[in-house]
Image (cartoon, rainbow, N blue to C red; front, side, top):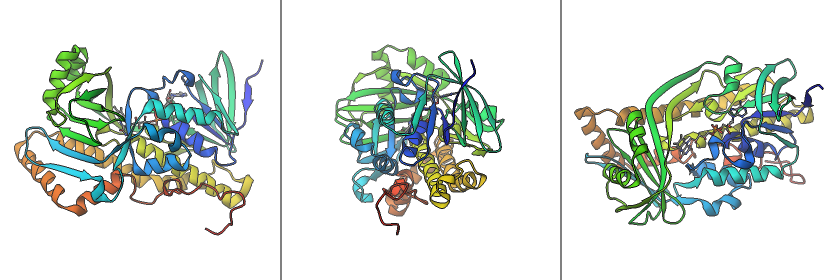
Length: 422
Ligand SMILES: Cc1cc2nc3c(=O)[nH]c(=O)nc-3n(C[C@H](O)[C@H](O)[C@H](O)COP(=O)(O)OP(=O)(O)OC[C@H]3O[C@@H](n4cnc5c(N)ncnc54)[C@H](O)[C@@H]3O)c2cc1C
């Protein structure tokens, strides 16, 4: 028996946070979408949907709101009302305070599991949407008018002939490999140990980022009295603390973080993630585009990875919608001109955020005394110069640069019956 054939406008490979958000955005356009995911989405075991919590920038909150998702997930999201940045054993600290930036919150902490479940639930109601999962992609062949994605699901072959393929298949992107696109990689030789814990003093919406000689530690507010902890350590140290019993672990974590939230009273399950910086040498190939961590993967120090990915999603959805507005139903979503437009829009933001994140790690990772003093001074000056804080705050809140329609609260396409003037 021959392979089943599907012919959508867009085939998305990877149904993690980036791929499923793109599918949801495109469900608000006339484009048909097939989403191919390696894991079984009902098990919610994708790497994207694990125990981690993601710090969502205000720009990301707006995108999720415009997609109609915030109503569902907002009650599970904890607002960050201030961020305290310090260095262990050094003077100087900086604070970014939401009220001073005239925003209700600097960002929101949301558990990946909650966001992933809401995305897939919304997709189950979407029109012109088909999920192929669990499925393995076998090959990808870009052609003149279409790109052929061959996948295997439940022991049978399925051919997906789309006008555009989107690689949202994560840092180790198979699509990137199949297309022979090189990626620049920097292994930080560090792991992030992730856990949720309870503290003696309520967080009150405060987030803490503390730089230590081993790596940064973040304590981020969750809904209720829990705190999400991201503890970055050299690889062998991370492996060692992962093996400690809870009492010994609490003792070491407390020692590294200090007592700003009083005693740590309870720690939850720990998991560890190897950290690397990755940048794909190209964001596009013939009839194919790379988004999310398939395109750029960052150190989690500044909580920017998914925020960047969501901006990829919003811009790609807008560029595809613009093609529909310009050419009507005959529009070709995989045309070179469409992909070039996407590339031009996204490259600068990606490079800036990657350089900023990498710079933070290099700057605070250096133990030399003169640099340590200048860091202390830098943090103090940064705290005293409102312009510097406002600039950084706007950038990390995802509110700087050219904003997509979704990030401005506008629909991708004019609503039916609305007047055409913009
Ligand atoms: C410790 C840690 C903390 C973080 N904290 C933050 C934060 O606070 N804020 C923030 O913005 N970002 C944060 N990030 C980054 C964020 O988690 C990632 O940017 C985000 O998960 C990327 O999503 P993605 O969908 O691109 O990739 P992934 O999450 O890797 O998803 C890829 C998906 O593709 C599927 N897949 C893979 N290969 C195939 C294939 N061949 N065929 C079909 N499907 C396939 C996988 O099963 C998976 O579901 C953090 C990252 C880490 C490691």
